[in-house]
Image 1: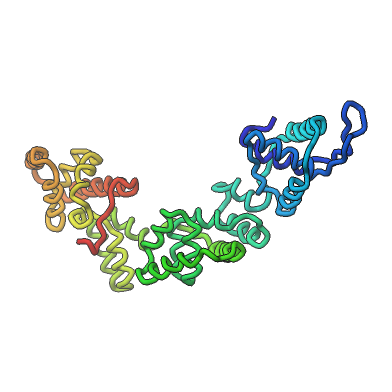
Image 2 (image 1 turned 180 degrees about the horizontal axis):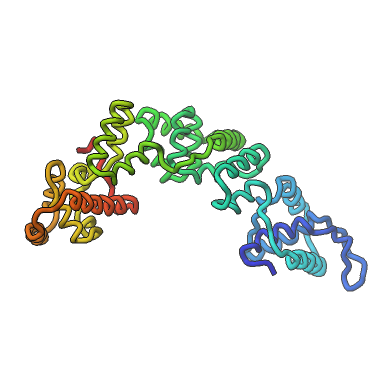
Length: 363
């Protein structure tokens, strides 16, 4: 017998393989009635339906689905012996199944998801887009909001309304919130006008969008240049970071400003961290590193040390101040290394969704 995960696919395949009943005999006698393969498939579907089972008949071709439905509509009574013969053949076909394959390039790509290179996947998607019978919206809805947002922003309001109607409520809300307010309002209103859009139109829009998204070449890097430069400068020495930013301002002031916003250093803590998140950060940082960072803070970073101490219990703050005093003078190199450890812990918490940075305009 096929594995349980293959059962429904195997049953559908077996339905398609049924032979005309005229080729069967019962106990060596001539068959009592000629049945087509569509009628035999109808018997199996009816029998399973009576037991509460449902087959994924949508995996059959449209012609096969139509023929099966027509057969069910024209049949009336089937004697028990005929039913047993059809069931026996169906079980025989099912027993013979060893493996089932998804069928079509879309099914193959789903099966191999995460195992093919990005360039090979893109090429195969383009090959599949013109001939696939699969619903393109299933794949489009699975894409990230970052990929969908530029398409939603550039497309017409009507297409945008169809897109949001095909996505989950959560994803639609996220995309709507990231659009310019005026366009978000227009698309939201257009959603109310999508009730009479024909399914064929929705399908054509989906195919066009899938083709458009497949035409985007795969990126060599997961993050953009601003994020990559910002991440590098996060862990660079302060002197190096200042020199690089100064050079960037001379070359491209807009890019330099974007990088500054992407950078998060110890000095940014008061502006970018919510006071309520300080206890989480304290638990994530080794105490010796924390004491070193607080004791070595001076100039622009001194406010960060005071911000941290002010947002913990008075008793804990007093204990840390005593430890800082006992530590004495801290070398700049050691202080910067400790501050980087605090920043690294904050970055890990942010990546895990444990805290969120305050936006620059919320200062």
